[in-house]
Length: 310
Length: 32
Image 1: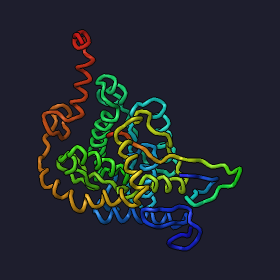
Image 2: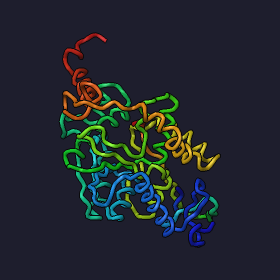
Image 3: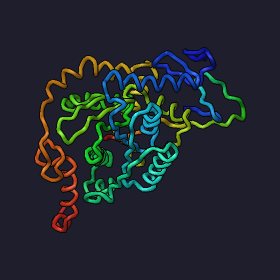
Image 4: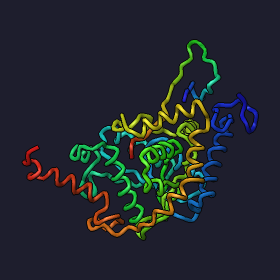
């Protein structure tokens, strides 16, 4: 197979784009796709301060690499979720990446912040799946770090597969409020929120993995041990089967949703958040989801709860 | 993603006997 741009031998084939690329042309293609998404969705400018959420995985590190190379003002944020040696290794990858490039990385450890609850602590106390608690904790600490650091934008490495799987889940359950907020750019609905953007939303996991490999990025390859059996992975598997039979399915699913259907859901979402009575961050109720979760854990750990009959 | 040495392999690539390849998963994520 030959490179679509220069006719040299292709190293990577993208069936969804009916294209192949050699290494230099692929790196050009990938960076251009990111820049196009940033420009088309008015995500941010070179003057704004970006807080990039990094996990040590391929997506967030590939994104940080593209943004730093592109001259954007970036600071990384790594959240220590407390998931055993997996968290230790992902922390090391993020730290090493930042050190090698002279980039600023902020590290927040859940066990050393606020209530001192890491993801496994919450999952054990509430008997809920870890991914649900993990999402709530991440959103809270991303928001508070962006606010405390006076950043303009919070940037995450969600890719096309993440967005397609999330869309499938939202559609299967007709989560109208979730569909209303599923966009590559979320404008702040409260002064304590910052703009949230996803520059990789039209690039697949395969594409980010290829970019990370070609750039020599040392990322954590293994899957989070808590993700085994997660619903999102089932949706990704289904979507990958569709994609294999019909290349371009994931791209059109997400792109056409955003173009045709999402605006209809967005007009129904006009509820503005108040301030949480617990932490002061924006909340759709008396307490934000983070404080509700923390209080649930504290209640379940209390002696009165432990003594109550099952 | 199929890796042979420092290079990626496309689907049509033919492997030789004795080739040392790494097959690297690219799927990640949970339910959040």
